[in-house]
Image (cartoon, rainbow, N blue to C red; front, side, top):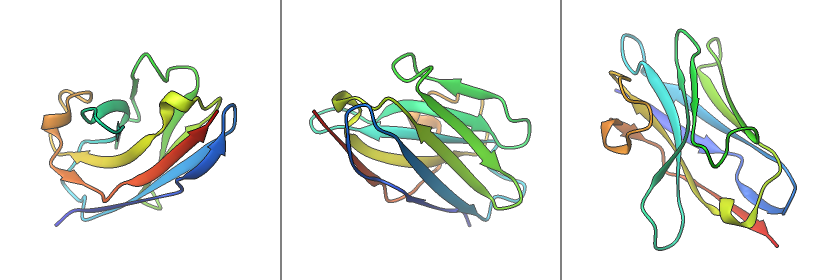
Length: 124
């Protein structure tokens, strides 16, 4: 049984920063990859960043590369998304997901478990 819970969303001005957290449980012998996706109004859920749970390899969408950093704390079973230089177009509900196989980190449909989402709003 896998559970993921996001936190850290909020309202921030353009150029500001936020740090999202994703607490994971039940991942023993499961979920090779943890990822962050986001969904803006009227749009599909899109890939943001992902990390290999054990090896630490990271993956980013072009739109956030250089601004966002994904990391994980294996002891705390927590994945983080540090978001810097935020833009209004980053406004979305951010979801944390777990992918058991982790063969295609950027593929939304490959993820097996999702958190409830946390709202990030970036004002102009």
